[in-house]
Length: 506
Ligand code: FUL
Picture 1 (cartoon, helix red, strand yellow):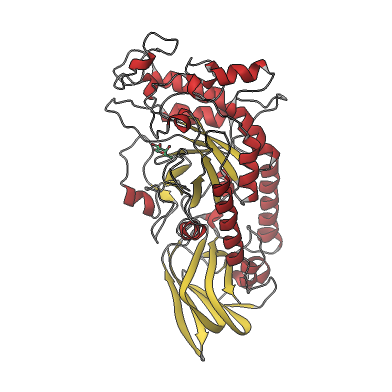
Picture 2 (tube, rainbow, N blue to C red):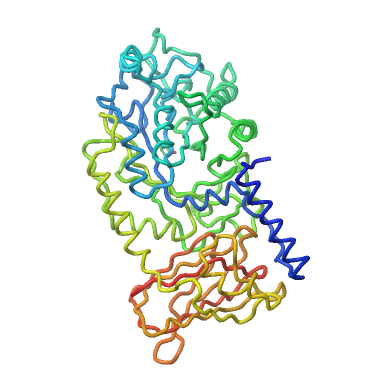
């Protein structure tokens, strides 16, 4: 069972509302449609935008995929400050950070018992420990995330070059770091057992005060650059995560809880479904298939779009960050298409995020806020609907789309799969964007919607969309002067439920 006490209260509250609706008022909420998100997935959808932190030996060698040829002495940040990471991300409106505890090169950033190939065996860490300072970068980062009120997640690369016999490591021969080559189905030793141990260490990690570190997401990368075939025991990895971190999301190429979006550009295509019909153990979907997902698929496995603020995942002095406007475009094609955006912002060799990147993150936040904080619809404004479920406007009325409450929605009868709402803006406004949210707690249903604006007395179609899902941001190429807006659901596989609708403009 995966629920915190807050979630249990929420479940009890929903049950009480359901009882009140069905027993006292005689009203019947719609039944869930096919797959629905778990409470943890629902919360994860709402994180929307968070940071990826690639940090490790590559930061110091200038590589992207180090070949596990350096000893841990290579890791020597001049002025490590994980608080600076967390503060920068929190200031930038990012909800979490996910750190590479181990990238493909195999060097562990935490104090592990599974390998000698860890930063703890390097001169930097020994020097810190001698001064009574922690040299466990994963723990330090987790503590900083907590301090600044953002969530913390971990990337643990399944492909491990340090253990892969196909990757020669001449420079480590006959050193402390010359370890058994257990990666691969045909190699002696059990890599799955080794990986499970690493995962267990990370999911049971504690802060200095001995309280457990809560992880929001485990990023189990699907990539490999080697011919060595290793079949991973995803089920066991999932069980380990579920047992120790019941509220964490397990990210994988195609599951368990969230999937890759199929590219590394932070974008997806216009039609995006939250479900797919394959697991990690099955043949991989193509990039295009991952972007779209599968309508009415077998598993609720929503997409997350990973992207880089610079060209590389790791810091390289020669690269420059993308502009705030480029990030804004990316945001509209990820978060604006119901997909979470995971933006990599790598620390440099000092162990801090460089000022140019922090500045861009803040500019991007300012641009986002300026765009989003132009809502024209206020709670309580009159909303007319084509129909209301059971004529009960308290529970199912169209006013619910403006109440700012994630648990309420406008609903029509089970037999209807199309319907519309209309909102008078109280005079002419210049409108250029819309934000629409489907009530996904009961499943993803909608496959067609249209937004019209009243222009010179006639409705003009402004937006024509397919899938809705958690959140859609539709922008207009040209702003339009309009006094009334209409949202029409034109296709749904079950009666549509709209949680929220907003019109942006001046
Ligand atoms: C990929 C890796 O190969 C890259 O180095 C990076 O970590 C990216 C987020 O995932 O699969």
